[in-house]
Length: 494
Image (tube, rainbow, N blue to C red; front, side):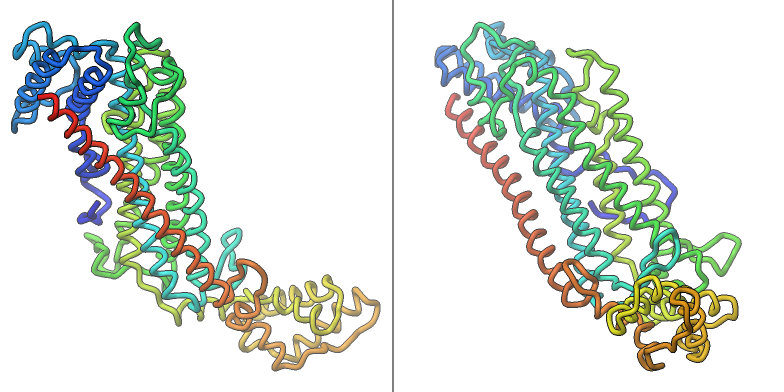
């Protein structure tokens, strides 16, 4: 999905998750369900070959009619049945053998859900690819990380984005696992308890590109349309939360007079009254869209809990005709991708932000424990005392007088150890422990922000992303192959 409007106002909501999804509407599915039904009825010898042939020719004429430009789209099976009857009489209704609106509507909504989920997966992978590209460029770009809104530790931008890449891997896992339940077929279960006809539900599923039927016929056309769509809608909702969290960190930069993360200024918009302003419209737009997605997910659940089995039921709650949760999620991912493509990183300013605060004092406490065998609480209290004095007197790590550090250490040791002791580290060592670069380089253990660790983590994320991209492509190819085989089998009936 291409983003052209970065302003937060105006209506530009897409109709579907993709052009392919737009084309695979109700009418598309009603026509291919008819094709699959006729092929299966012929193979099972439920209808004689000459009858099948006549109905197939009538189906072909009906397809020409309903795919003609300007023709009103199909939204029910009865207009299609009427068109078949016009071509070959009441014999045409034999195509409906063992079927019902219930299993037809369930199947077409399963098919539309399948496409929406694959489009969501594709969009998620495109966003992940953008994050990965930026992260690989900034494995050593130092930035502050925050807890409680306060600088906590120095890390790198690559490390920060790696964390979100791992989170999106989890969401892709959930989507992929859920797809195994999405790609199941209801067709052939009739109203809800099958029929007296020996239909091959497995063959119907195969012809339509599904992995198989949902076994229990009541579950297939009634129950599964409650929980299965909600499972994948949950993935969309959680992805929206992750994106919202990411964007909140960027948006926070605009409250500073000298941000270190900014959008390209040509992608912002100016105030109508305040000439100094460069407003981050696309960030605000994407954050609003995240709220829309989360709202749509909640609406899906609220809607589902209040509906009985059987139409009118939950068959369409997530579709573009109703909450459009996947349409909104795909739009959000495209907005987020565009936002990060427009992002400009000011490395020197990020380092300055770190060096103007006391973000490295945990390393100071660690150094006293590791290098000089002092108890943890002594080092911690000393580092805290240094920060207290520095902030009250206006010092930063680079210019904090070493003599004041020595005095802090004497006071802390007198209080905790019962006697004054001299600070065992030299001034050079004291400054080194307060260096953001030193702190990041010396973080060890699995998943640390050290450049080598981050680079390895991002390379693993890249391999995993490539695997996920191949999975989406293979699922789409499998659907296309099934459609081609269905078309060939149908043409053989003519």
